[in-house]
Image (cartoon, rainbow over all chains, first blue to last red; front, side, top):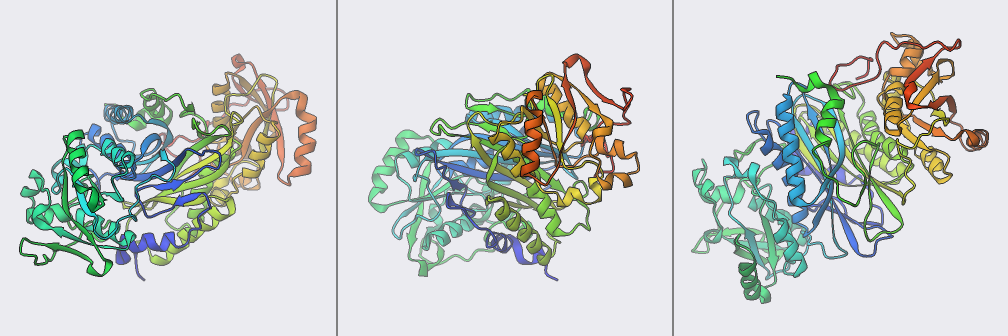
Amino acid sequence: MRTLSDIGEKEAVRRFTMQLKQRGDVIAGPGDDCAIVRSPNDSVNDWLYTSDAVIEGRHFGADTAMNEVGHKALGRVLSDIAAMGGEPDWCLIDLVATGEETVEDMDALYRAIADRADEAGLSVVGGDLARGPCLELHVFAAGHLPQGTAIMRSGAQPGDILYVSGTLGGSIRGKHLTFEPRLREGQWLRERAWATAMIDVTDGLYSDLCQLSEMSGVGADIAAGAIPISAAATEAPTTPLQAALCDGEDYELLFTVPPGKQSEFETSWKSTFELTATPIGKITDIGNGICVVDQNGDSIILDNQGYDHFAGNRNGQP
Amino acid sequence: MRTLSDIGEKEAVRRFTMQLKQRGDVIAGPGDDCAIVRSPNDSVNDWLYTSDAVIEGRHFGADTAMNEVGHKALGRVLSDIAAMGGEPDWCLIDLVATGEETVEDMDALYRAIADRADEAGLSVVGGDLARGPCLELHVFAAGHLPQGTAIMRSGAQPGDILYVSGTLGGSIRGKHLTFEPRLREGQWLRERAWATAMIDVTDGLYSDLCQLSEMSGVGADIAAGAIPISAAATEAPTTPLQAALCDGEDYELLFTVPPGKQSEFETSWKSTFELTATPIGKITDIGNGICVVDQNGDSIILDNQGYDHFAGNRNGQP
């Protein structure tokens, strides 16, 4: 009999979501960075819902400092809200623990969560505490944005310029724990209506671009030489390019801007943020697929294409 | 160094929640069955948020049928919403799996969740799938009710009559998997404004009554002979009374009704529901504490007082 590992994460999610019916007040169900719902009595905002897990041995190690575990747990859902252009409001945390954790460690974890929540302006309003085989945090977050303004994965158009914030690759060497969710940048992109589509880079640039392209019904060309490679990616066991394309957990924003706005957008971004936004390619017709091309215009073949929770650890990510 | 097991669940939760700051739009943070939040642009409803976990080896066994696992996972959060008098709207599910689960089992789990969601009228709008050491479901649910009408744990007054729905004890023999969340009953209690306080019985009648009493600043007398004991409780290793008082996972509603409404309430309940609502005692002044009294008015001493996730399995619950 086939197992979950045999079919992989994407097929498992597909089989689940095809069973689900969505009410009329669900603007976007499973498939984007957040779900979007609308209350009949609220004519101003849409509501964003997302959840993410951090599990010992998968998302952090047994020796990871507790403040970094808390930082990452909250950071993951904040990154999802950032990728819609939203503002975080409230969250709940399901904590699973073995019981052998020291009180000092748990206090450090709690303090990190409380501090991160304060920074982001959201309240931790509840949750659950249960015993289990290892330490896990499951964070559910709610956020909002003005109705109809969410930046979806599905809005990219052929010709749009593809941008990525910050630098990519090698996050396992630290950034996957200490990253800053790009909330300010995501909100600014939404307020100024610069971006036609957006996703946060969690499974790897190539993999997440595939998601965005699939949901937009488009293809994309990436210029290998344009990709902003992080210093950490140069220490990767693969090539730095491979690391930048396929390592997971960068938590940067990947987004598209219409070609007519390119110049104005770049000027405006530079005058607003210290963080870089780098043009790395452009959206094409769907028939072109996803191509990574070198300076001669030749396609580069990737060893692998990103992280799948049920296909093993192919990128050195936890 | 002290561990989480040393301090227990309640102290662990207390240490966490004391770190948290709540925004002005949080009507009720951690401590009730659901958190209550209010949107500035919605003048009609309050929003309820809750989360609960089911973990293999704790909340279900390795041989539990997958449809029952799905049923229980969703049922737990629905019971929380019922205990506020709310209506469920949307939920997200974090699924943790080993990868060795069969596709057939996962399909059965998904189908049970989808069916239960349809029955309750809520949409599963997203979630997360991650690999971990055993099967777990973390369900986050949102619901609503008219502003200011939530039935809190904190509203009980001395003199109020204490009621419990259904029968109690021995749920480990099946009901903990197959229970029906008391949504209709909870909503009816809220709409008719019968109840001054309410909680769902998850840790055991005695333990949950302690919660309600503590948050209301009152005491309570329970008449042992009045407690509706389930047939399953008569098979318990302890006495049936001990099982009905202290077994967890009954998922019944424990609520209080002002004494002047007792007769009218009981008539109205009986004409509306087949399920019983049994008066089991009354709310007293805080100085009286929680007393379980036999037919002679003598106090009964309990062997233990309910379920604590970090104090071991004292009640035969999973």
